[in-house]
Length: 369
Image (cartoon, rainbow, N blue to C red; front, side, top):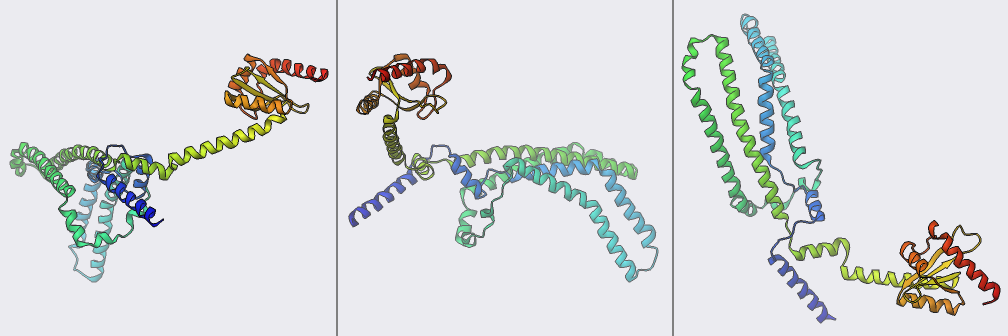
């Protein structure tokens, strides 16, 4: 017994080592994807979230620039006209503080709301609704400095560092070109009025921000595609892992086959026990046999047993043992075998044919055969 346990343990270890070295070529099963999602591990690009939020904020601020300029100008006019003309006191200081906080919330509140709404929407578009408590559970491995250093110098960290350099370079080049094309116009700003300067600078800042935001958005979309591909590659499984998962979720195929075989045998035993209750057995004559039962209180005759080849022969032998009439009728036997399941009533289209068979059986009973 001990030797067998040792053998099984060694076999399990060898299989695990084989599974670890086996190439992962199979797509992840639905169960594997579901379990990974429960842990909060999904394909997501944080850059895409940031790009969508930045674009939304840029467009929102530009469309509502009148609202922001009015509030800022009104606040400055009040400070210059009313607050700086009176001596500073404690009450005035408190009033200025409250006014400044109110103005700040008035200006920044809508921006925060837009950022939160579009941030949630971007996250939902990427991963859908996801509640994963396991993702926020504290892990002891996160406090391990060695593991932290490994993550800092891992292949993934190097890839992320390269992506960050690429993004900074591309966005920087776009901003540089946008500013360079409009740089000469900046020398004429002293000759413009205050409103013209404000309008020009506002448009310039919007154009530069929009250009940089669009480039960042395109890079973020490409990053999202890459994250989806990388996530799918990391989820791939070996053939051994797929087989083991099927055993865990659906059961061992060999055991399932044995259970089905046992169930089939038990069903055949129950079926053969119903043959003595039959009224007649309709045969093919050698390949098929269908046992029918009909009593006065029944709505229609029903099939209590059926089989082909060896089972058909057993049904006929059982019928002979209990003096059940056996009628040869090839088309009716075939129709009953193909269309009617055990314990089901015969269909309407077979009523006439079965009625003739039953009439023949009743005639045989009257003759005493």
